[in-house]
Length: 129
Image 1 (tube, rainbow, N blue to C red):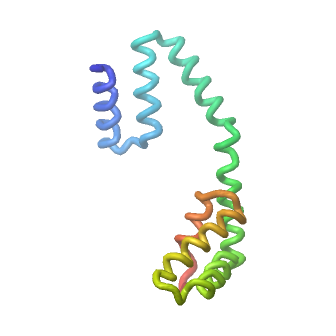
Image 2 (cartoon, rainbow, N blue to C red):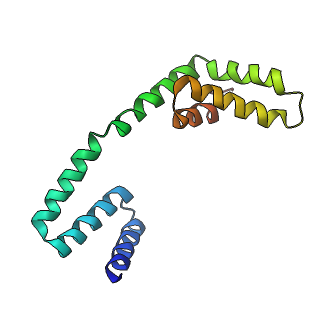
Image 3 (cartoon, helix red, strand yellow):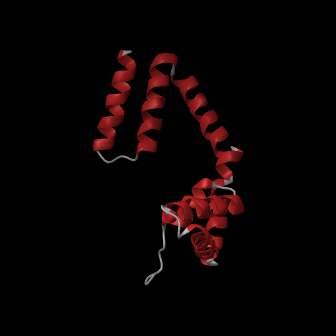
């Protein structure tokens, strides 16, 4: 238990020094495994985790889903989808919220990613929109 508290304090201290959390967590994990199991198993374990995480299918498709969401957003499909849903349910009580939820559901069905949906439906980066 005390090792976990020391590790948490080390991560918190590195965060206060403005070290990115990914690096501070990796460093504290490497040192923790190195102290408890030895340095060679720590380096081997770290290399294996980095390799397996880097080639994980679930993490490799996220940028492609974001690209798909941005392409759909730039084609203004998201705006037209929102307008269509608002025309259907806008006159109801809470129609704005219902239209937003339906547009997000439709957009998620098109691109297949809730992360890309939230990125596309919540941001309008062009000026004047």
